[in-house]
Length: 457
Image (cartoon, rainbow, N blue to C red):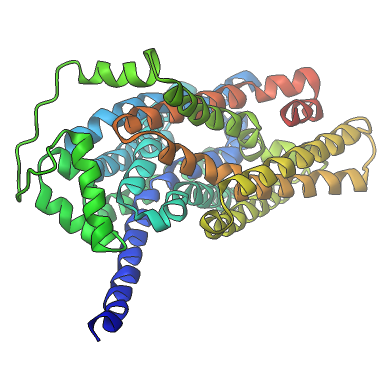
């Protein structure tokens, strides 16, 4: 009799716990909107910045891509900061920094001030990229971890779409005002985010690191499928923190870490890793490198330039077509979140990469044909270029985009996860920065079609 009633007692709790973890993952992952908005809004704002400030192509591409390099400061500082003040307040801190950066960019009077604003915003983006997947992975139950840890990529895409819409909405303003409103209004999401995050629980791993076992048990009880899973997760975290398994209580003394603890983590992961850890490191960093080396930021960041090369000349039509890219990207990332745990990472990743290669080849072919007929429109080539761009962002969003963040947040052992994720984000941002800051020069040297043939290889 009792055993027959047990499923009815457990099932509602399981569903409620997933919903609670779902809500927390959404709030944490919303920090990724900050990066997405900057990428999306700069794609259109750059058209007007170049005219208003009268800057060169080289200055423009450096302005576009430098935020990725600046974000390294935030990425590496986020690990130490989050261990000091907690994951939740680190998310708030990231939002505050980005607010300051957006404010500076919105009121920039010259190129130097605009670059300084991008430095500040870049630090905030670095914090956000590092802390969102770590917090979500530490909070999520195993049954939904792949689904929930894909959320940062979902919100990057949503942010890109918001940036594209902002471009279109404010493009009719006077030249000196339009791009400043586009950039400055990016401060609004960061204010909303900072206020909403205060209602989230702290990461159970951070609570255990501070000896607050009772608080950690409450959070784990709310975010685990079963009491047994909650107990197992607590035991794993205690072991990683160096707390004896038999030690229990509301608040316990956490063994002091040795002064060379940080050096030990670097040694385990970088300086003298075991063969297994070396494979994990290469896999974690490699997937971040190839995600950006595929040219996704070149397509997203320079999409107005791509469509202009494809024969679309009106600013309104350029920005409208760019909005279609954002909608496609967002829709397919939502599809991916539901397929990750059902289909599996590997099948999605392989199909995604194959589709991206064919799409890039189609885009490069279309743009090359158009480039060889500068005085005449080639309708079929224009159609191929636009369709290939849409297909490319769709294939990216259904596999390589979200899986990179899910994979890197899951693959590293608990004791080196913070450093591993920071190195992954650094690899991701450096590669993106190099692509973004050289794309215009590369296109001028080997044509825009040649640049995309290179990315396809």
